[in-house]
Image (cartoon, rainbow, N blue to C red; front, side):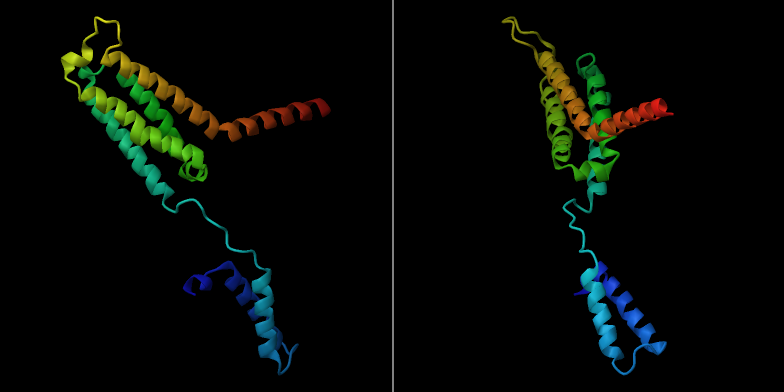
Length: 198
């Protein structure tokens, strides 16, 4: 009931009711003014558009902010342990975090696309931290050691994982910005056509 008081339908109905009251005060309607006010309220309320359905969480901004903070924290921890990490892995983590951070800087758009939202959240909260933590939890001498059998070392595995995660981050970004790319291409096409017709 309280929610209805602030709804579009109630506000439109109130406008209708005020119009009915104005009609009474100006002498357009006589003793039946309560029926006119109620009738106009009902008509305006019924004609008002329905409330918009919001499937996106209201606190998308907070969630995106939290994910960005987690990514910053991860990059900070990796940077602090740079000596322990394989060469170029710190830069790889930074590049992945930058792509994800860019997507999270537009929380309304990020939250409105469930596929992108899930993919970014999984990458930021699970995949990237798991790759780094698994490597850092190994003893340093074991992580850096190459196996004689030809199997990849833990360092090689981490670098491969980061490369795969960076590729995935770029794929997600391409889906996220696909609409902008199409809009830009449409605008270019429009400008060319306008130039040819002028």
